[in-house]
Length: 337
Image 1 (tube, one colour):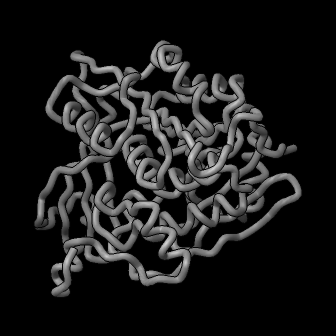
Image 2: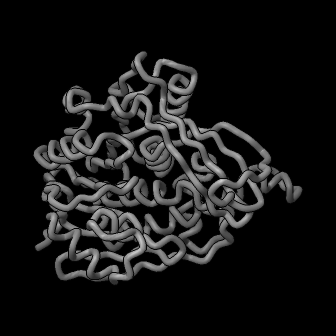
């Protein structure tokens, strides 16, 4: 039913050789904080409006780069201030954007985010230029895909483009990871070229054609997804960690306990960590444990990109050190950054 992850002999060459290619999205995040999330039809007062980088592909690329991977990004952005800011960010993080197309017909994607005092959030995204990401863009980036260890895709880009890219990656001997978010019904969709599919609990149900709140056990939901042909199903559960379902393997990976400040972007952080771990040749359970730790740490800081920790911080944490603090937190405590 499910298969082990396969690699070309030159793939998974260890930490120094890890290469990740992201088929991705970018959306400028327009963020506001409120004491609580509004109910339908209700207006609440907010504070601290800010604009920050967002989009699942953008987040994944930054996190993977901060974990030490060589990262390339394939996607489409608008010829506007948000798009230019995104390209500047990617270059500053060391991400190759030579295959990211800039267009004039649509603006860059935008996401509106409301956060509350309990670290919950509501998000609405207008894909904008992401909707123009096509098979032709994937073909134009074929060399970047062929050169990577892991190809990572999500669904803020057209489903057809994501699947086409993953199929090409599989053809080229690359490990393929699909984060099916935002979730769509994947019944009848061939996923035999996906090595690992990584939904959260709600996305897993929607992807399997079930109601979002279905009480069907995760194991049964994973079995439904496995019928589509992926090599493994990894269902993330927020603060509970992740659960792996693969041929002959069922393993729960618990999340470390931390003080959660903001969970926004933790799923993207997890997927980036998983891609880096797999790209370094770690077996799926070990790569998942690494990814859970990376995502957990991201919850200890605000926003997405500012919350993403670097490799030395993650390794220090895994070695038993305290949760690394941001420069702002250190200054507030009277220490040096």
